[in-house]
Image (cartoon, rainbow, N blue to C red; front, top):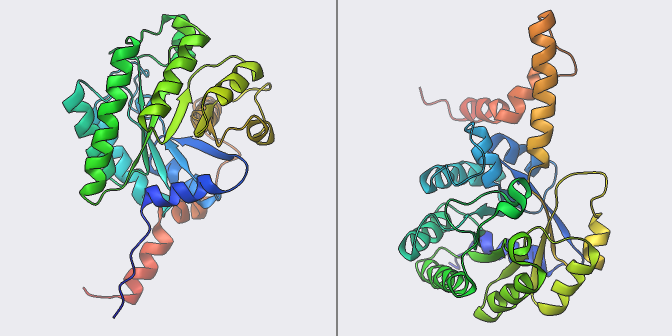
Length: 295
């Protein structure tokens, strides 16, 4: 009898990236947000280090650990229902051997891809820290990506296919030319996806597209001036990351609800409890238990 081989999460991501145009990549921060976006039809999701840190009451400043991110990744992969999940690997959580373990662990957890950046430890969210971001020098950044790619290949040999996103955060600290040079070097090493954080406007995006011929990711904060998905595609980018939009929505809604509930004892504009039960999985659980009554 012929055996069917399941497509890996990385294989699903490759298929998404082969389609024409750009695809939106919403950021998620826990299993619940992952499930909601997967149900909404997201084709790919990004487990944000900023979001996971926030859910633990911490800023995105190198405080949470690899173990915390890996456990959250496992939960989110289960909740994603087959939607490929990219995991924020920050700087790799240490030296070369730590980075290797990070790639292997996230791959075993079911991640489709892992993002590795060139910040110095402890890292800082570039959108929050601006010019205060510290990065390693170019040689160290290249060595970090080379180690990540070796770990990627080892993971694949062990049956855990995964992609590596090579990211530079040096634009704010060292300028555009250095950011472009690093991205070109990352692509030359064999990075699956290249990503430059905090580029400033269409001209800079266009220059990056000129420097890199492979797959590119573009990241934006949700605001009135952000590029549309069509704009992202027209610039030649493949993934449009909106990493903290879900977190922004969560905080805005929770603040509104908290203010009303504390002041008046009640709140409005909430999901019906039946919908809450459905989203968290009670309907499926009860149907399964009814079918297999084994107690």
